[in-house]
Image 1 (cartoon, rainbow over the protein chains, first blue to last red):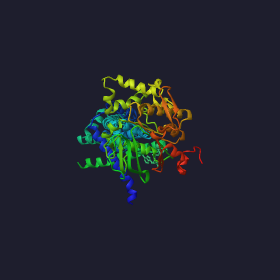
Image 2 (image 1 turned 90 degrees about the vertical axis):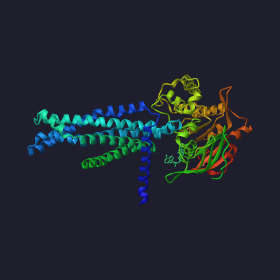
Image 3 (image 1 turned 45 degrees about the vertical axis):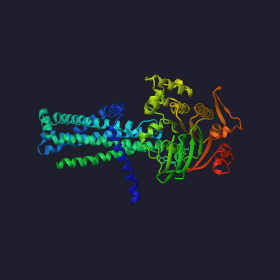
Length: 251
Length: 285
Ligand SMILES: Nc1ncnc2c1ncn2[C@@H]1O[C@H](COP(=O)(O)OP(=O)(O)OP(=O)(O)O)[C@@H](O)[C@H]1O
Ligand SMILES: [Mg+2]
């Protein structure tokens, strides 16, 4: 029993150590600004299209599905409320984070994993560079900055998707849709909708880096690290959204 | 903990009863030795016997579970990474897998150690401009005869060329100790010979301490019995009875994490140990 737990516990301990160092380096020089901007470009600009697309379709799908139910209660006009609340609180952050996890947790893990197996990480340490400072911290900062922005964009485009359906299929006036959508959102929802992507970003960057830096066993190992990074960060996204959502329900 | 005397400053590397484990597998098993400034060692050992681990432990990239490690006269066993940086600046290393940064050009790779190690900034930028670095990088690439590849990326070079860039990057800082991890692995015999000739040239021109891990029988023979002649630019054999043949270069043999043989080339060749003899008869038996 103890042996069974030993490995995951050791891995978790290593993960906590890596996270600690990565956060400490945020406040320590040298700062690799160009690496931060490069990562923002890769993660942010690179994910913009797919995040917008998925945001749009989630708004469309939600409006269509909800309209059927709401019509039954004669509450068709409420579509804007439901779309905006679900998007801002839950779907926007989670869908965006899952997409970015799929694109970038894997990208980070495979990049760092290849560097690990070709001994580039060792070479960095041998040549006077702290790989956590140079590789992990820039990815952490970039993801934490970019994911909330992507989420806001996804939320907004999702609302547009909902609007298209309500306006052209359900015949709801555009002012009614936007007013109800806007008024439904409380301060609380916005905070929740921004804290979530921030937390998810930290998970995505750190899990990606962790599995990348842990890679052993050549090219096959890189493949394994990549898969694990995506699976583990996705699971953590669901766990965190539940916990954070729970906290905000109680507020 | 057999010998606890503080080593002389002229110690390049010293291990005192060093052990370490990867999970349950032994990485190093009670390894002790000392290499003094200017000496050379050739480490033989089967795949997985711990050669790379030994080299990485020597420069503090891997921490031992027990025992003590000295690098260039200082005890690095419990040294923090940031303190180690200044010491590692005096060590050059060629990694087994190359370790060239594939996002950087050859010129950037070779200048990397000069620009990123605090301890070297003064040494190579005494005049306050980047020219010293640039000249030094050219010089190092000329040394390995790859001056024409400055702006290429590592992926555009052949395996042997990448190895040579790795050597250039290892020696560009004029280190006191150079570690070569399997420099000839996977190369054809002619390229392998060129690589060893470069290693000899570096050793004999600058008298840096040299440790080389290898599988190849000839590598150790060349290291022990040949020297670089600066006049002809070629490597040539020492007179067979020259005492210096035996003095500077010794052979290590590793077996499953243990240092099982340590001696001169003649002792190596005369060893009756069947495991040691494997490295004397390439091709088996
Ligand atoms: N990072 C690591 N994690 C787990 N085990 C490792 C690690 N590095 C090395 N090992 C193990 O330690 C042992 C020694 O490995 P090492 O790389 O030092 O061997 P080697 O003599 O260099 O072999 P080769 O000739 O194949 O390069 C092997 O059993 C290897 O599997
Ligand atoms: Mg090795």
